[in-house]
Image (cartoon, rainbow, N blue to C red):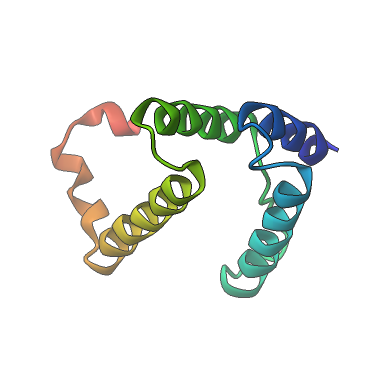
Length: 105
């Protein structure tokens, strides 16, 4: 049920660019991929409140920058995925201890 409510919030926040059906479909795909490749078939993969706020902020940024929202949203995801792959490939998380203790609190 939260997926329908958050899909409706996304529908309202993005001027119907991301609605309930897109949210349900993306959750189904993400859940299937996570259960197949993450080794945790019972993990919860779903849209949350912070995700809805993130989408709203990206939509407002795309409007203020006068660029299309959906390509902006897609490129944000692609760049995030690439950064995470680099972090994993080079085990950069080992250097967090040199940044400070705020990551442990």
